[in-house]
Image (cartoon, rainbow, N blue to C red; front, side, top):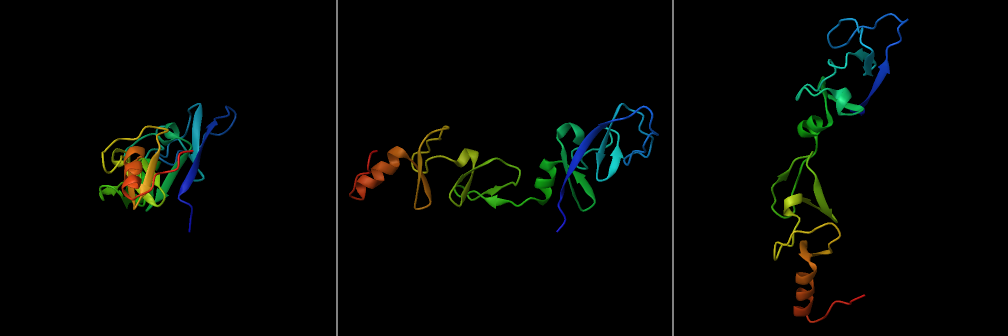
Length: 154
């Protein structure tokens, strides 16, 4: 299977070389800089995402190709990326969205909260995964007390 991610190089044009043709507009590149991608040369303004029109040389050093489209990472993932469902709300999680993970479960950032008291977690907060539910420390310990044993404090 062919790798879909391709690199973009910015090169400075040497004044003593013959101008190269742009793969986007077919005009000669007379600018100070040009981009090299997909084994072709481009004006900085001509190498753009087919969906959102962003200039790929500005977005980063990679582009993605599929179905004869040249795309930025976000649009490639939006169109062709693998999506999944949130373990808390069961709604679809788009491939480009940031997520939280706990073991095999994936969550929207907004859904990553205690499933009993809805307390949101901050960076560094302890959380527990019990019977596939995310719990804060208080609810986890209360559940252990009801089950007849206290958690070990270390």
